[in-house]
Length: 75
Length: 234
Image (cartoon, rainbow over all chains, first blue to last red; front, top):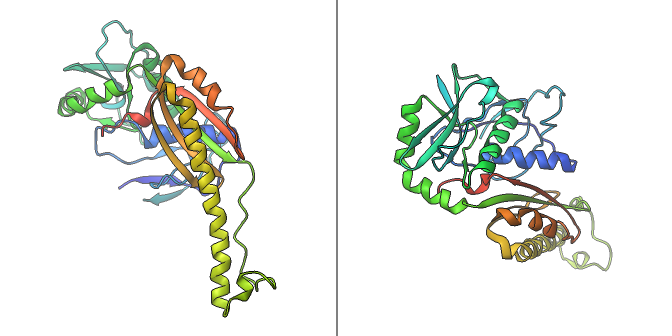
């Protein structure tokens, strides 16, 4: 069971899309050696759900803005 | 101790390991033709932060620059200790070696194509204009379905354009392309999300080549970066 932090918004700039692409790769791709699927990353309020549908965006991974409260979502 | 796995590579004796995340040591264990790189945390943190994500990306990128073949680990992959990590390597040795060969000498480019104009919102139901196909329908229900069909026809047209775009990009990258993953119209506003596995020496040239394609879309090309999308064991 995967736990993901989800907020509903769309990427609105090229920077956001680029960060989304990177974060998607870090969190959703790569070699899997263990069965662990829990994703809980403070301050990263993006995420693709399992169907690879962009529901959310990274506010700014490099920024200093405090993350908005995110809703827990169990996929 | 908990180990946060970063990447699996071929064994390399000549590399001086950089530091791991949050100043903790980066450990490397080698087992049967494979090396695994991980940060040794004295205690497993409750959460990773966005700084940890970026540090992981930088660390994997540095390994990828120095080595000919890298399999980034999905974040977060926690392993209890070195013995457990070595057991995992041994258990999946064949598949890991095959995948290292798959990405050897190659790198990933990420393509996102954004529609320049927003797709029209589906219109609320209303009586069809006089003279339209829907207006000739016998009942309100039929008129509604005919109008919805017109809306879906627009979506189909966009999907066809995105598919054509993906084909064009694949053709442009073909001389240097090993593999391509594509998702056509994965969400509203996004025409195409794709990952290209290309030869390292050609990556910058391919990036420039495909960035020039435009068909009602804005093309964003990220990378080259480690082959995240091609690392998982099939």
